[in-house]
Length: 472
Image (cartoon, rainbow, N blue to C red; front, side, top):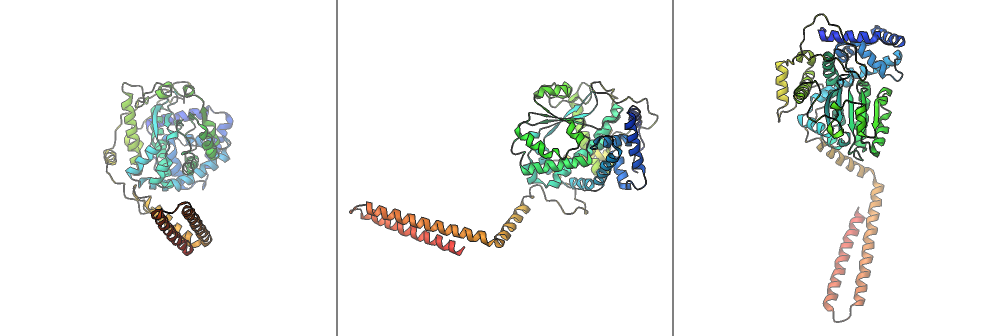
């Protein structure tokens, strides 16, 4: 339900997956057939879950999606375990995912800016060998504290879910159509420079743990193109060990800690590695397609991704609205490339954006635009960017007041301490004044009067402090 008629490019992707399945070992083909039969059983999936599976199938390639889950299971290519992972993922996709996308829709432009600045990522283009997109994450510059002051944990995760949905439902299908085979993985380079106690703080760890758990539920295999960590300090191992248990085995196997950034050249093409990390890519350029102006093509792709987000927010299909193609017989499909070989690349169709989507994008980019009104179904309205700290502070004050009235014993202890301090000050002051009086000889009446006045003042202040302590 809701699926569009496959385009010629989609049919090329489907034919490529058929060739991929035919080349699988017999045991893996049997596992795929068993999982396919399980999914088709009456009552195995609800209508909403089937719709979610269709949305997550790249170019309508359901077999490709099932392969995704067969590889994400704890025991790879086990149909029973894969169905458990698939079912859990689809239940999440029809409940929590829907809520997260609703929450993301209600966030303001200011909150989105804070999120982008606090979780810095850059796009490094597309690997010319397997057509997988590559992203650079400045993990050492994560500012979870800044995010938490501007939005709740639920809102932070909502923006992460939104970004992954755009990749899965727009970027992956677009790259698949252009490549002629299924692209459902991405690569990540995590620059850990600057990683320290701030990233190992409870607020940062809580966010990362929740994000990884969410990723495992909805996007388990998306990062298995490879995650390469560079410049790993001591704090990284504490952080990684804390979140490792929430990762799938496939995800753990995809992670590599590189001792030297030069080793990146063994994992990625030099054309996709920034010059600061020993590669040839000047930041701001792209290798999305070989051409005379790669920087312009990167900007176009990033603009398309943002436009796709706006269309998804409206419940529309960004791929077919932004890249309309006619159906028809599919030409021969290329097989997915093996590692180390260059993929055959189709020239992408000209981008034709829907007028409505363009207007939405223009409106979204306005500097002072207010966020869209939140749907009535939302549990409660979200505060503006500058206001989230107010309510927690007021709540904290109420909690402190309640704690004071509920804990009399600690207050009695505090009052006793204040009283002892007052008595100690009084004793010391009296002894100091008396000693000075003895030392000073006659003929210094003015100094004596000043000391006497000082003694009286000290006594009166100590008396007031003592009275306050006793009253407390």
